[in-house]
Structure formats: C-alpha cells, structure tokens
Image 1 (cartoon, one colour):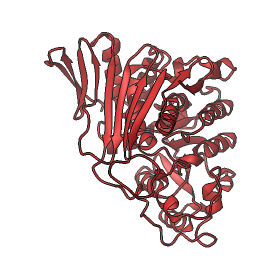
Image 2 (cartoon, helix red, strand yellow; image 1 turned 90 degrees about the horizontal axis):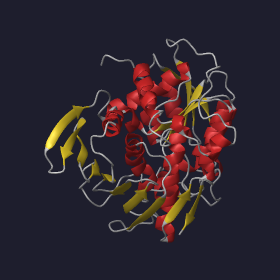
Image 3 (tube, one colour; image 1 turned 180 degrees about the vertical axis):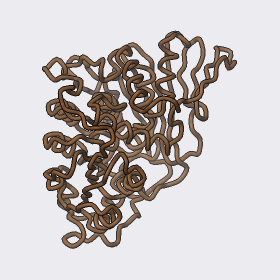
Length: 426
C-alpha cells in the first residue's frame, strides 16, 4: 500500500465533506445548531506521531481480551498502561499480560495521568456513561459498538455533546468502516455509476448459537462480593439480584443489549450508510422472533430490519442464528447493481452483466480492518482529525438501531423527525 493511514483518512474525509448530511463533517442537525462545534478542535497541540498512546482498557471480557491481544502487537502505536474490570479474574489476567495498573472502578482509571485515551469494551448499557465521563476527564475514546444502549436515544445525543464540549477524539468500534471498499463505492456512486440508488441490502447470519448469547453460559468463578462487583456491573441498569446467565450472556437481555440488531447489524448498516452518503433514517420497521432457541433469552434469534432514508434508498437487513445463508451485500438501482464480493466489489448493469470489478485498496478482511481501525484512532489522536467512525456517525446509526429494537418490541413502525431529533411510533 503506497498511501499512509493518515493520507487515507484525509481522502475519506474529503469525500465525506461532499457527501451530504450522512457524514459527520457535513452534518447540520440541531446539535450543531445549539452551538456545538461538529469538528474536533485544531487548537490542541498534536503529539509527535512516533509517540505511543497510553491506553486504558475498560472491560477485560471477551472483546477486551481480543483488543488487548491485538494491542500487544501494536506497541509502536499503543501502550496498555491500565486495565479495568469489575470481575477480578478477567482484570488480573489482563494486568498480568500487559504489566498495566489494574482498577476495579473505571473512574479511578480516568484519574490516572498515565492514561491518554481509553478503549471501552463493556456491556452496552455502560457505553454512554463511560464515554461521557472519559471525555469530561480529558481522555480520547475508542468505544466498541453499539455507541450507546438502544433504549434511550438521548444517550447518543449526550455522547456527541460531551465529545464536542471537551474537544475529544472518538472512534466507534465498527471496524468495517476502515475497509476502503466503502469509500471507493461511494466515489463510484457519486460519479453516477448506478444513477439514483433505490435499495441496498446486507445480512449477518450465524447457523449456531454462540456462548455469548446462550443463557446456559456461566462464569463459575464469578462470585458477588468476592471476585465480582455485581452492583457496579449493573450500573445504570435496573438493580436485581445476581443472575449468572445475565452476567455471562448479557447480549441476550434487553436491559444490557439489543441482541443481533445492535451486535451484528451495526457492522452492516454503518459502512453502508457511509457508502450511500445518507444521514438520519426517516422510517424503521423490525420484525422477527425466536424460531430456534428456547432458553431464557429475551432477544430474537431472527431479525428483519427495514430502514428508509428521507430521499431514499431503503436498506434491508437481516440477522440471526438460525440460518447459514447470507444475502448478497449490494446496492441497487434501475440501472444496475454494486455488489460487494470477496475483497472488492463489482458493478453490474441491469442485465446482470459485470461491467467493472474494483479491488479494495485497504483492509478488505476482518483482521486487517481491526488493526487499521486502531491505527486510524491513533492517527486521529495525534492529528486531531476526525476518525473514520466518529460520534456523529455513531449517533445517526444509533437512531436507526434505537427505532429498530423499539419497533420489534412494540410491533410498530417508527419515524424520526430530523428537526427535533425525536423518534416516535406511527
């Protein structure tokens, strides 16, 4: 690859500025109208790009451990100087691996002068609170997706305001946005390769249960009052007695997660919105059910989600754990199809004849995307430029996810009013 990550990001943002309200730098919603600067301040002194960022990892479970494994191979970029978890077994394991300071309370970690930025890999219901506290503490933030919990969209607005108020860098952990295919696809679409786009589709299917969803999963060493601070784990969620299934498989309970909708479909919707140049959705409907698994999970094992944008297109998404078959990932118009295949994409005419094939110039596979996304965060910290998946992009996607989960639970279609930034059932 001949271009640097910083140059790639500048190219991405140059396209973003012309793509309309769908991207952070072009947004003009009411948050910006309230006097919040939608771009990170350029007045903050940049570090030398050779200086590793001192990173605190909050959440040492499955995702946190995977991030730490990757970060240990990227020590020219990051030094893990602090780790935090309310479960001492996970916390102590990662402290031993990294040599980092260990914390049971993330607020103490945020007080550390040895932490420049944080990576948040906790259950979803903690994302907003931790992000806002980190921004207020002067830390830059990488927060795993979804950016906030699905229930209250105000959380996403509060995150945007906190990041802007404190002039912080925020990267949302949707690693597929670091795959250059979506930038390349947007350029092709803007050049008119398909004319007016009317529909897009994608999916994220599994054909089996996953231990992170199975309510039969257990962490046998998790003992409240000994190895686990259960009250702190619950945090802003409803206070209930210790439930080992909720601790081990939080993604299956609505108090902590939106299930497949927020866990899987975030990875499909976010890069599509960037390629399409769309912003806030207009109307969202979601259906599905528990067709395969009959344990105590609350979330559906099959989800069908339709997202309509004000000027089009409609994006159709499916996800679940009850089928081995995925939809072709594609963008459509009366003139033809842009279809993502392998490590690139094809452009087909209305007769399904391939007229052009384009290979990704950066990070087409999952492993590369995860590394590139962290590198993009690193460069944004140094340059104070917006990362590829910033808080405004996260907010717009959360609007769709918020409406989707509510639509499924309430059995209603939801609409979003961009003037008031409010969603309602219709």
